[in-house]
Length: 359
Ligand code: KG4
Ligand code: ZN
Image (cartoon, rainbow, N blue to C red; front, side, top):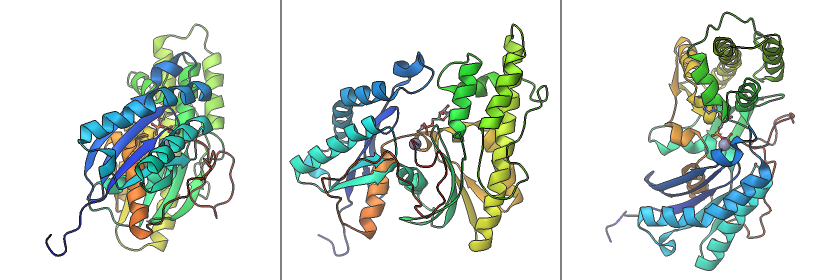
C-alpha cells in the first residue's frame, strides 16, 4: 500500500423521520454511491398531510428493501460498510424508531459502529457534500416541520439565530394549499397556482417584517389567507391563483426580512466571505430563491442552493453527517440509544414552541 494512502470510509445512512423512507451509501471523499428514496405522497394525499401512524407502517414496510436496493446500486456488501448512521430524531417517533432499530440491528449483526444522527444536523451539513464549503456559514432551513436560521460554525457547533414561533414555512404552504383545495404536498401546488396569479390583488400581512430579531411567524398570515378565502363566494381558479401568489409573495418578503437581520448578525461575528446556504423542501420555491438571491447580492453574500435532492429529506445527508462526526470523534453511539422526538441542534437556544419537531 502506498504511503499516505487511506481507504475512504463508507457509511450507510438511513432516514425515516417524516414521510420519506431513504437509504444511501456515501464515502468520506464525498462520493454518493447510492441514494434511494421512497416518498409516501400517495399514502397521505387523502388526508392533506402526514399521518404519523400511516408513515410508521410504511417505513416498516419499505426500509429493508431500500437498504438492499442501496447496497445493490452501490455494488457493495454490508461487510464493506464502515459505519451505520440512522436518523435518531427529531421527527415522528414511530418512523424514527423504525430507522433506529433497523440501523442498530444491522450494526449488531455485521459488527459495525452505529451512530444516531440528528436529522437537523443532516440538513445543516448536507451542502458540504459538494466540495468547497468551509465553516462558518449561515443556514436557512425551511421544511415542513422546521423553519430556523443557524450559524453553522463547525461539526457539532451550531448557533441558532432564530426559529419559527408558530408554524413552519412548509406547514403554512401545506395548510394554505389544503384550504384552497390545491392538494398535497402543498408547496409545489401553491407555487404552480401562483404562476397565473396577481400577487397585488390581496393585501396580506408580512409577519414580523421590520421587527428586530430573526424569528419567523406564519400563523397570522395563514389566518389572513383563510379570511380572504372564505370571503370569496364560489371562488374561481383565478381567485385561487391570485391568493396563492399573494401568500407566496408575503412568505418570501417576510422570510427575506428575517434573513436580512440574520446576515447582519452573522457578518458582525464572522468577518470574511459570507455564505448563505439553503436547506429543506421549501428551498425549492423559486420566488423565495429569487428574493433571497437579491438580498444576498445586496449584502455581499453568496447564496448556495444545493441540488433539491439534497435539500429535501434524504439519507445521503444522514450518512454524510455520520462521517463528519466520525472524523472528529470516532466513538459509536450505544445500542441503547433512545429515539428522540425532540432534539434541538442548539440546546442553548431559547425554547420556542415548534422547535425540535419534525424537520
Ligand atoms: O424537507 P422536506 O422534503 O420534508 C420535511 O418537511 O421534512 O420539506 C417538505 C415541505 C413541504 O411542506 C412542502 O410543501 C414544502 O416543503 N415544499 C415547498 C415547495 N416544495 C416543497 N414549499 C414551497 N414551494 C415549493 N416549491
Ligand atoms: Zn427534514
